[in-house]
Amino acid sequence: MTTPPPLGGLDIEPVSSRRTVQDEVHQRLSEALISGRLDPGQQLTIAAIAEMCGTSHMPVREALRRLAAEGALEVASTGSAYVPAVSRARLDDLCEARIINEGAAGARAVAFADARLVRGLETVIGEYYDAARAHDLAGMTSKNQAFHFAIYRASNAPVLVRIIETLWLQFGPYLRMLTRNVEPSLQPLEPDTYTRHHYDILAAFKAADAKAVGRAIAADIRSTRALLRRLCEDAEAPRAAVRSRAAG
Image 1 (cartoon, rainbow, N blue to C red):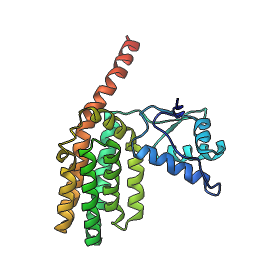
Image 2 (image 1 turned 90 degrees about the horizontal axis):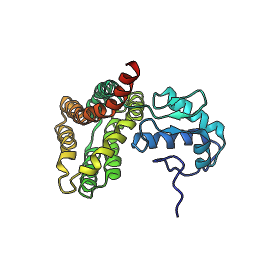
Image 3 (image 1 turned 30 degrees about the vertical axis):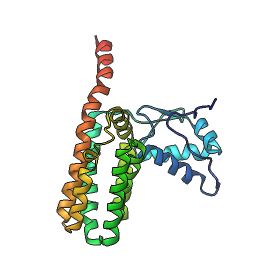
């Protein structure tokens, strides 16, 4: 019988190089967060992560502190970290920040776009489409991230890209909530719903229309926010009921 990983949703390989242990732990935890593999409210203990990574507690502790400074985790007095809980207010705040920064990066990328970038975006959209047809949520998440960051990195604005990466780290719990709720109802043969905005972004790049790229990216983020708002309300309802009983 296979022993499950000590932290649900988190399965990372041991760190191979001690020269940059803290950076490697930080990178792997970041990837787990951005890809939506960790649940809102999930605890990440230093001991469990250190064992998983095959390293000592110190680099894990520092990696968790870095992620807390980036707003991706909350650290308790014991040193253990938690994935932040979801709320509609935080969702709206994150999405507005994403619209501003990602729209700006996308619009800027038009000036640097070439045929190679457009072909790459077409390829990733095709792979995303195939993943949707195959009911492959992990594949869809990976290709969605690849599509967006291919655009943002083409903007030649490394500071802006770093801001966007931090926002995606903080958005991880919402992505987790979305995939958990979407998966049961995902229609394997109807992937157009999940690729429409990507095709709009691609068309805007082909037309070299920076404003249209920004609008299409904003529409993509807003459509996801609309789905998540309903899920946040469902998630917040039990907490509100507990607070109400306590107040009464």
